[in-house]
Structure formats: structure tokens, C-alpha cells
Image (tube, rainbow, N blue to C red):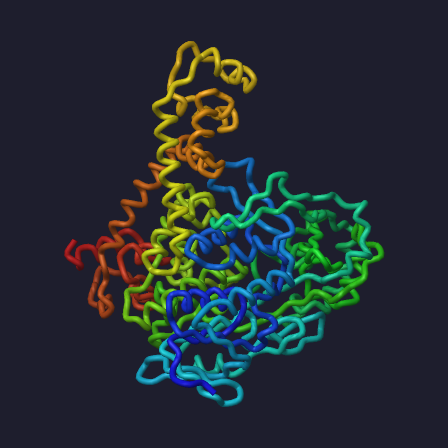
Length: 622
């Protein structure tokens, strides 16, 4: 059935698998996407949304690198919001509410339009390894598929077990069977595995809800987009709604705690700390009399509603009774109850920074198999694994993003260096260079790198070059052009800012806290420049940020430069830490297990202190 040998085989058709397959094929590798159900490629297993705090930055980075998640999100969006606008630009995070069915449909279409990408439906139960290198995979029908590299993106399907109250059954998500055999195969090769848990809320019939009793949450007045390719922004949007639980709801939920798999011992694995179930919230935050419930439509043409904030594995009768006591849900009808799911994962310290496994050459892991949670985290890993699988096949150096280059770099470095014992979710607080890693400049940061790889297309590079050039010219104009006091003082008075007595550079007045680019655009000189030079608001915003936050940006760049010096001090693969008497036993144990590639990575390993790094510096002749 399969003639010849593929360059890359991707196992799994979720967010990680879709990005991996697209990246490898677009870079020129003969690629096969194998998944258990071709009808669920790009399926949103949990909430119908993309982006959010730190996650929105990741989607923009994926797009800047030439991935598809941003485009698909824009083309299936039903609402757009830029979160954290009241804070500085390092915290601004785009988020879209998505049409679930349209999202998956658009992913399937884009993949089918990708040359060099084939598809096959089956479960992969084993991998073929020869002399420590990957040779291919074996399907549940016993069919071998030979490949030079393999990317595993199995999501929550590896020995997946679904819990609803005291009932449980095998499954990878609602209505789909679990994947079996592969965990055992990997363990036989020496891989360590673990179990994690996640959950999802009930889906309900929107026709049965009373929205008049809820608080409406409309989208932005001027919606933007994820993709830098200027996909069309929304001209109409669907609103979300907010309601709350109550003491009565909590009491009703507690009636089922003795039948909850979280409390009766049926679930032993670790769930996501930052996305707890409703029963976990009631238990952990007993002093809270209510919790928010976000009522999210599933698409343009469906009445199905996602009850965000009510993730649960309680018995279905308890779910129903309690939800009917929530304001606006008095007559609710269920489409399906919420549930928890346990699944196998493989601690990511078993990976190199390219996401290639240390044990088997040419084998890559991406997504929830690495212990992460979230579509965006999975998609970014898939993209990087797909890129590096292609590079591996072509005997090229791996593509690795540093912590000061991308949130994706922070994500992967955290995983391979620190590991994770709970589902890993990205936050802006995880990035020490978040002023550099903004959502507005992901294209300037990453598209040139991707273009050099051959992934980002010429149109992306040309758009970035134009944006960079126009921004540079505008910043120069604002730093050299002066304002007149009689023209600026009325604006300053309106802003309750101190008036000026003499003219000065436009950049200085823009740096004031209450001044914005919109205020400056009313000045005749600025208005004329923006019009004659055809400056977009995207470029104008970029110039404003660079001027307003120049001090912070320069400071972070200097700090990154210092840290990156340690990146250049490589540690040989066969380095013997045991001969260093000055290293503590813990340091030797951690360094031997992680096997860092350079001193910078070594310095970030939990348990490694500055004196250990000094010892390594001396040993390495520095």
C-alpha cells in the first residue's frame, strides 16, 4: 500500500500533528499524516477558542514562522478580543472565539492543498527501530510504514480513560476510542512514561438558556486578526456571556463528591493547576461563594454552547441538577455531560531541544505526549518538530529558538530542561524577556529565520521587510521632527498633562504616559506624514511601542546578550560530570539525566546553582 519510504511520518491529526505535517511537507519532505479518524483533523477537543494570555503570542509566532494556526483561527473566528489592553504591550494577548466545525474543516482543506502530504487512517501501535534509529511505524492492521523520521503527536489518546462519576471507559475523547500498544512499545525501548489528567465541561443547547439573566461579552469594536498575511477581520461577531455559580450550586455539587473520581481515588494522575474542575475549585477555594461561568457559542450555525468554567467529572445527574441552579440555566438541556480523561505522557526531559528523543534517533515527540495542555502549546511544538524532522532527514542542523527569541523557545526550553509533573501551560510570567516577545512583533522576530529555512514564503518576507523599513523611517521622523507648543498644548490640557513652553521632538511628547499615537496623529505634520507615506496603523503602533518602551526593550536586550554568551559554551555529548569532585551529588545526577547542550541550559536546570556553573566553566577552559 505504501510505495517506497517516507521522509516524515506524523502520527496524530490534532493541532500538533496538523502543524507538523504541514511544516515538513511545505519544506519539501515526502510526508504522511496517519490518524485514527481523518474526519477529526484539527478537532477542538475542549473549548472553541484560540489564543489568550501568552497563548495568543504563541499563535502569532506560529503564523510568523509560516504555520497555519493563525490563518485557520482568523478564517473560522466568530469573535475577536485583544486581552489586557489596559496593561503594557508585553501583556496584550489576542484571542478568538472559533466556529468549531469550520475550524476543523479549514484545517483539512489547507492540509489537502499541501503538496507532498499524504493521508492514511489507522491506529499506530508500534514503531520500528534499528540500531537506535527510527525506521518507521506499524499500524493496528500490522502494516509497516517505513520512514526516515517519525513525529508522535498522540494527544490524550494513549491508553485514554474517560471518567464520569463512578463510570469510566476507554477513549481518547468523547465518542472516540483510545490508542493502545504504543506506550508499551516505547517503554520497551527504555522510555519513561507517566499519567496526566484533563477535563472538559458539559455542552448544552443554547436554545434552552435565558441570556437576559447573563452579562453580555461582545467582541472588540475594531477587531484585528492573528495572521500577518492580513486575513480579513470580522465584520460581525457573536457575543459570549458571563454568569456565576452560587452557594446553592456548590451545595448541590458537593452532594456528588463521594461519587467523584477526583475524590474517591479513581483518578490518581495530575490535572492542570490553572484550569481546575468546578469541584476542585469548590474544594480548594471554599471561601468563595461563587465562580464565573463563561457561556461560549460553538459556531455561527449551531445552537451548541460550551460552558467554560464548569469542567467536571461528577456524575451526570449531579452536573445536570447543579447547572440548572445557575442563573440563566434554569431550563438547560444537555448535549453531553462533562468528563475527565486520563492519558499517558512521556516526561519531556527525554528530549533534545529539537524535540527529537535522546533514545531513538529520528523520533520526535510533540504536544500533550510531552505533558503540555492547550491547543497553542501543542501546535507550536508540532511546528518545531515538523521543521526539525525535515532538517534531520536532510542532515541539517536543528532549528532551535532561544528564550529571548520566542515564547515557543521558552516553552520547549522549560520542558526539556525542567520537565513537568503537571500539565504545562504557557503564561507571560514564564518568559523573562516578555517585553521583547510581544504579539505585535512576532513577524519581525521570526519570519526572517523561517524564510532562511525555506518555510516562510516570499510574500511573508516582503511584508516583514516593508513593515520594518516603514517603522524605522517613522521612528526616525518622530525623533527628528518637532512640535509647536500652540498646537500640542490643547491636547496636553485635555490629557491633564503639563503644558510645554517650547518646541521639542515628537518622540519626547509621545513618551508621556497619557499620550498616544492617536493624539499625535491630530498634529498637522504627523497627519501629513502618515498620509503621504501610506503608513498603516500596524506600523504606527510598532513605532509607538518602540519609542514609549525603548528603555525597557534595551535593558532586556542587554540582559539577553549576557545570558546568550553562555549559549556559545557548548558541553560535549560525552562529557563526564562524575569526575568533577566539586559538583554536588544532586548536580551530577541532574546533569547526567538532562545532558544539557550548553552552559546556558545547564544553568536553568532545577538544583543547579551558580557555583556548579563556575565549576563547569573552569573545566571547559573558560
